[in-house]
Amino acid sequence: MTDRSELAAHLQALNGVNVLCIGDVMLDRYIYGEVERISPEGPIPVLRIEREEAMLGGAGNVVRNLVALGARVTFITVVGDDEAGREVTALIGDSEAVEPYLVVEKGRQTTIKTRYIATSQQLLRTDRETVAPIAATSRNKTIRLGVEIVADNAAVVLSDYGKGVLAPDLVAKVIAAARNANKPVVVDPKGLDYGRYRGASVVTPNRRELAETTRMAAGDDDQVVAAARRLMEGAGLAAVLVTRGVEGMTLVTEAGAADHFPAETHEVFDVSGAGDTVNATLAAALGAGVPLPEAARLANVAAGIVVGKVGTAVAHAEEVLTALHTQDLLTGEAKIAAPARALDRVNQWRHQGLKIGFTNGCFDLFHPGHVSLLAQARAACDRLVVGLNSDASTTRLKGPDRPIQNEAARAAVLVSLATVDLVVIFNEDTPIRLIEAIRPDVLVKGADYTIDQVVGAEFVESYGGSVLLAEISRGHSTTETITKLAKRKAAPD
Image (cartoon, rainbow, N blue to C red; front, side, top):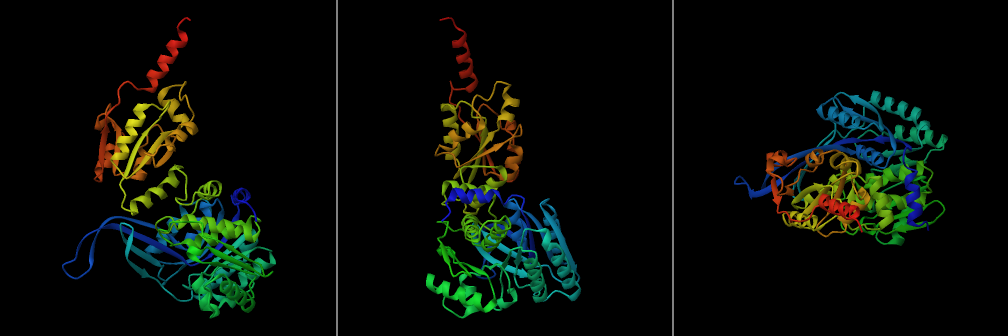
């Protein structure tokens, strides 16, 4: 079996691979708040709304995962001529890595899934959608686009959510075109008739879907393998990758081989979109020439990351690489994160009801004053995020002879401390953009500042956050230490 370092090498090959995605796009809305009382009008909780988010769901989440892995995506889908359709269009347009082909169909409701969440608990989900085959004109456009574009991509993923975009003739013609061009096709299936996916390279049902379509038990390993083989024989499929939740995945191929991959996570917060992550990773890996068993292992690792997050999440290439190198899948990530990746972890903590703290600095020549500041900051919150000035920004702030230690060394010292939960290196002169993205509950700075001098204080206080001025441990300063060393060096022996 390929070791994890070889899988990490395969992961690098996903960067820039072209993947064609066709399927049912959705708009996922998340409305977050707190429940503090029960309605006097009935035995129902009253959600006090604090914030809202919107992101691409369904096949759109497959696209998000492909982009997060570094792939380039051609996306074919159908939206309604409505506000949700325009919002989907705008969200897709935010990524330069996506080339969209959106067919607009009048009279069709763009699917909207709205989830109401208190802390980390989902209270309610509402759906607005049209579940019907797309119109003939829309179907003809998508077929023409799909068949014409297949050869320009390294792989195809068909994301079927049963809303009507993947009409049987579209599926058949795209799979035929892909086979003629020798391109792998990954299918996330829907319904009971898997014969409509005949010729696909691999389909990815979950355990329940496998049992329903084959009318066979799919409990233990042997039962899953037997049902998968029955499915392959009856539907003309080259391989089946069965997702089995906490038991991981099982891959069965035409050659009769069966590989069982144990789950790559120990803590599950939300399984929303995990199947999308599997299909995106599998398609990108196959498109990059990774053998199917190894592509499935990569998909298994990526899925283990997203189920450790809250909401419709994605697995970024950096996170998968970290998981492969460290095998630290309890948290699914290292303590050092780029700004965009850090937000995933912060959101997860926040959904658990944890109080987020933030402080920042250069932390050059770490000393007891730094220890005291971080201890006070951590005592004021449940999770502490430290913004660390990059080497370039430290030089601009402190002068051409600074930093003494590079950013990697400074970050390594910080993450070794129990008081620090996450380190984010930023390149700007101030951390204001990072603060605005994280929205900490408490912002911490040393008491040698006044509140009006603390970067981000006004912003944090504007939404009800607080600013803490930590007591200064006198007699400790990087600048003073450097000055003392310079004097000693200059003094005659």
